[in-house]
Image (tube, rainbow, N blue to C red; front, side, top):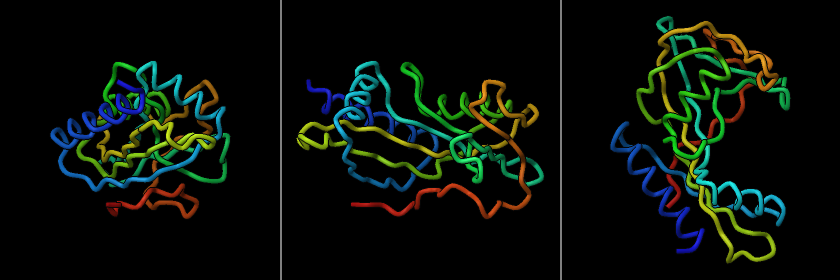
Length: 176
């Protein structure tokens, strides 16, 4: 089985598992083109079992949302999240990333969106990989919002009102 077929099947299986566990979600499909070097890195990750990335829109009992700022875009806020590690489901990825980036434990309560991305090699578009990005809805369980000490996150904070400078959260409309 080709790597394209394996990644397509892995994304399909993970998406089905998440829908069974958390309910229906609109799936946005898109195709992007990667330059050869970036595609090669994605291929290496896929061969190791990488599936994509996940994050969570976590709220607390006061209906505040937990957001973070990264060094690469310090003027904007976004949801905690990050890359999948082989051997975990994307729901595990989301919970781990929230914990690592903010110190907060959460319970995932639903799926907000899913994006199935087909990645095509810029010089040979027949070479393709598939990945899945998922954003969950979550509820605060425990912990104090605090940025990680490794410099990956500049700040983690609860917001009663979502700031204007918010990273775009993908639309939930379905691409057929």
